[in-house]
Image 1 (cartoon, rainbow, N blue to C red):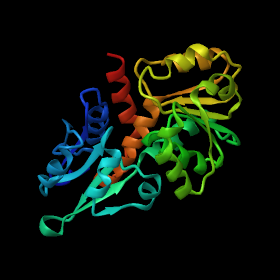
Image 2 (image 1 turned 90 degrees about the vertical axis):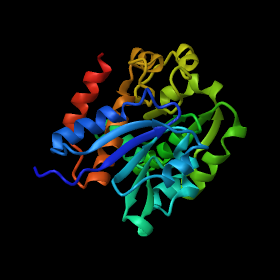
Image 3 (image 1 turned 90 degrees about the horizontal axis):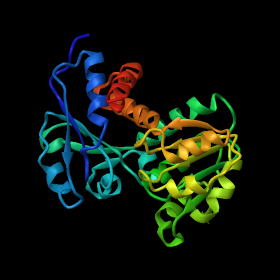
Length: 281
């Protein structure tokens, strides 16, 4: 395969040292023969983001964004793709054009990653009931993913209703009608769902895991992947449910980013192999 002109891409976030995006994207570049492409990680705060974007030159193809930048970036963009607009979260920035005509385009590949990862666990089974744990940017993407899988009325469990306003507005834009309940209710209720997605950060679901006794028959996707398996994944599997590791969501969203940035389909198998090697260290 003929390599394209040298280009740059990177993941931005704060903190970002833990990110596995460099592993995934570099594995993709190697498999695609894009030897001159470069992918890095930069610790960028919300305050630093405008200056970082302003300093990008024509060698840049795109950016991956992690917390806390997925919503901060929105007013800094020239165009936002419809899915990212309705979800209210951007995890991918594409740089199109150059010089004065350069355009920053915001996209969301988290929804794709969630749909693909859940699909691996569901194996074609319908999703008539679903539960979402958490109310952040990933929860918004999860509502969109569940809607694509056929469930438009999931139950969302939040630590405080006062923190769910953004998710409620996103749900309204999507045309989905979730029910909101407190996190304390989750332990006795999520076992009945066909699909459960925990969007909480690492260890934030440990108390839920300790309180959950099952039974469970559906599929759990815990977007946290450190430690692997998480406490919630272990409790869910012990109760009889199926588990999809959060690294699978990370894999598939990154593969879609590779496609958008390079124009080549993301080589999922090669990326998965690189990811597994890194996680096993």
